[in-house]
Length: 541
Image 1 (cartoon, rainbow, N blue to C red):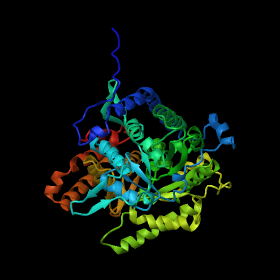
Image 2 (cartoon, rainbow, N blue to C red):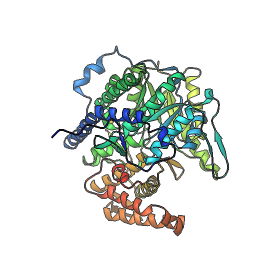
Image 3 (cartoon, rainbow, N blue to C red):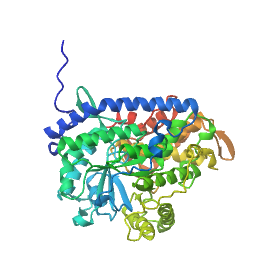
């Protein structure tokens, strides 16, 4: 009996959306099916390799630079491709999802770059996936506007004042259940990349820019190689000149921190830079070293700043690596959301943001992230003071930086301990974020900070780690162990507080009980889930 002939198209399995036919054209679906057949098998192999490497870390409690790629690190001759004009100056980048209002506000923000996010700042509902693509097409065609329920209107500024878009597709771990090819779901990363590239690559070239990407949750140079092969194929398939694509890789996993040069090398014809992000990086440390003893236990997440010795080692190595190879080094997120009611909160927070961005600019970073337009002038001023009229400081080679393998995981060098308030905050933020995510919101303001999926990941991972490492905290004058029972009690208190805060009707209309239950599942289950978004995705409408 012969095998069934593969369909030439990816098959849509979802309720139709308004104007989806403009995104899900027959040609676009054929392109997705082609990407899926060529590259999903390698994606599967690399996910299996992640599991093997994690098992090795659990066995050895250590990581090191790869001996088999030492020749790449020792070869001083290679550089990444020169940055295109649109990405030469990246001193301020704003991040956010691709809903219609955010698309306009981000492009108008005054930032040099907008990270248009289909990943951690976007809950992957089918509506968000498809309409986010449509919003970007509409923005490039200058046919996008938005009117709020209060009657406020939003429209694009002149083209020369708009941020350059760098799009972030989903990570490799998440499939898109609404699109299937050859009987199985297409990886979300290929859906997001493929639709954006298919519809916009040629349009962007005509605008004097190009299809630029942020690559999330990369764990090895082999995963970077896969992306590079995808870029080569896609450019060839659509007749786009080779090297038009540019990719900035988020070094937000601990394993990738040991392969920064190799990652740039694999992408060298398409590489634009590396980015240093905090929450996913800490989440990755906990995930990989979660059962390796007390010396890998992190304190409260807010106590782990970028000045912690092991975080400083990570950022110093990133700047050194990028500039050695001619790439941009992009700093971390300023997540503060200004208060419209409390000027004193704003003054204190703005001072912290300013100090953080001045430190990054002084350390040699070429730019940095903010989550809110009000922070753009603060970040810009910090980088203007260092860069002046120069577009970047890639000529600052930081040749005196020497980071050892051990320094990158020297968690014990941080003199801080877990606290009960840290536990309560992890539960509060975890429940509140997951509830919003289940309603389709990926970027959520919680306690004056813009939180995304990485926030919930580090929150639930720390709870898991503290329980399993036998951590004790001080509560009401007593030393108490962090146990599943304690976490359940704190979670019940938080659920009651939310009910009181929102009112019975609004509470019932939300998805609070589901969020509570899911947080406890991924924080307390003996089998640690690699990503909480995997079980959460099954609950999305």
